[in-house]
Length: 249
Image (cartoon, rainbow, N blue to C red; front, side):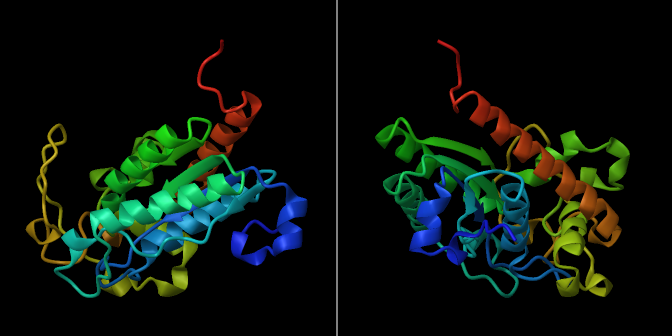
């Protein structure tokens, strides 16, 4: 069976594999309502990363980051959070470790909104320090699926929501044994789609979830997973073919 998880390699197998690409999965430990596990963001992003790596050559998946910047979600148990500064530093150091060992192509699959600015800052700083480091980021798969899947796939809010229809669906596809649909409930906040409002989560919902988690299904989750994995595999293969260069000289 093909090994893609970095933690399963040893010195000899790693050197023989001649790894040149790494997939990084970033998540969080926080409440996603009564129906999803605290670690759903990392469960999902890591599962996606492994599925992508299995279709590529010379690629490993770095052990997932189970903690993120989650302070804005701590009104419900149980939140274990890093600060923005700590999360940025951890992500930065992971990139630096890859570069040190000659892995100069990194693709991030992020599972948590609070990590987005931290990933951006860390990636920019590493890119400035090491111009030949190649970093690509899928920072919000939950928005990406709105463009990848037919509009009729989701019943409410285009599948959006923290622990909402889309995230509950992919949870049912990835870790069905950890999803309790009898507890699936959320609220639909009124947010302007053109203006970013900075909120703490208790301002959006009385629960640990927004959107319509009760509309989630494993079938929708499988469609989400396939669409994202296909997108990332196609992107990385295209980048490999063009040497990860952005423009032609």
